Image 1 (cartoon, rainbow, N blue to C red):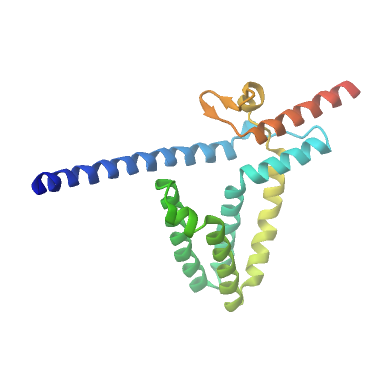
Image 2 (image 1 turned 135 degrees about the horizontal axis):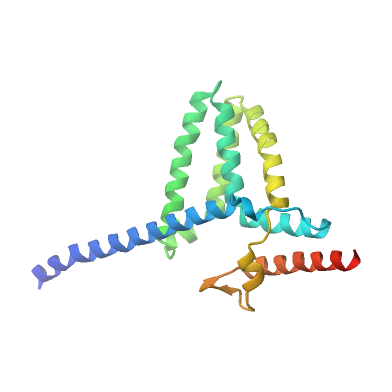
Length: 205
């Protein structure tokens, strides 16, 4: 029986590794779709009024917060490169640790250790505080402000001009399901509010 159990263990490990690899490929495809959705040229237009612009900003800041954070991060690394290369390399090393943590969150979504003990929001907060302390010790806080100043216009412009996806605005049902995928109900409501604003402006015209 012991020999039989020893034979089964490698197959169980192989099955778990295969499942983890499938999840990793799935999340990689999801990341590519997210990048495409973020920068698709046809998804930008002028908002019809102030309420529509406010609705877009609120929705896009929530939907693309990871993209905006990455833009700020890469901008900070670029500003650190000329005069604070040691700090830049150290922050790149720390970012790899955070990236590994994010990958583990994706691979093991039901892990009590990752979601209850190492709470993602607490980890993110510690990372931000650590980065600020490191920049202060390196006298590079000015570089952080420069990065924020460089990225803020891009974030604001994207949040204002990025329109709701046509498939979400037109085909979302009461439960937020479109083409077999779950659509956030809040995003659907924002799209409905924006389309209602467009209709009201057309009637007033």
